Image (cartoon, rainbow, N blue to C red; front, top):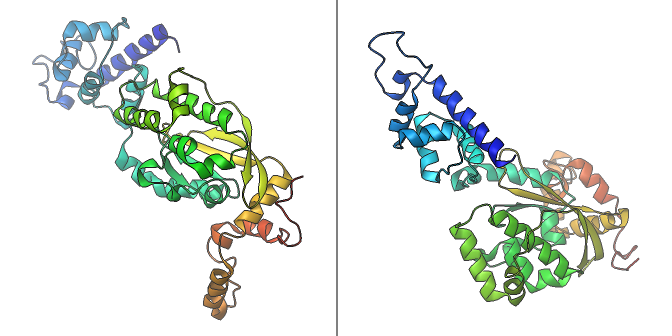
Length: 331
């Protein structure tokens, strides 16, 4: 949407919501003489007074003129117009501002997001916030790529992992183009929220810790996501190729979900072999004993074999034993 169209849409949005409100709904007295009000809903000067802004400025905003609105003013307008959360986000978007992340809302969503990434197993999947901090990930990601819990608590972040974590870097057959792509995508996203203190702290830390990050950041790289196939040299399973996919949950559009799909049947077989070793034999035998009284083998109870659905369990149980087919052997 170009700027003139955005301003026109913002003007229409404000006008429509202003006209929906009656004075009594916002604590203003009704007109002493019914029927004398020439405009439906609130007057512009009433919205301006309730929001603490000038009447002329608000009139220009409703007329679609080229004027800016700060975050504080937009929040005041949202309160004056009694906007709900969806309408507030839409107002901010029309004004060109990003919606601030709410930690409480993210914490509430975390169990649902965890179930989402678990559901796409055996494909490695992870979800990141606006700063590319890890939010949730599945067992396939931890087994095939890097377990974020092994990263320092303050550095469970995709950029920190890419640029400063030696084990993660060693697994990437083509590290530089992948690292440049992640940095460029982050720079494009960060440019939409200038002045974000978390962005500033992240960039400052990485500039100090990584010469590569410092050099490439100064070049101001910006690019959107492009489909790619990334080769990973896993220390146990050998070369695995993953097709990279990115998604944004509609209810949390600031979050980024990355799904890594094994590119070939051989790649899927290698991933399946890795996942089959997530639980030790002792753990399986202990669970079998717990379920013996139920006439149950313990493998398909509840969520399924090592946390997967039954359909995934069947696929992985059909995989050849590592001793029969060495998946580490390069094709």
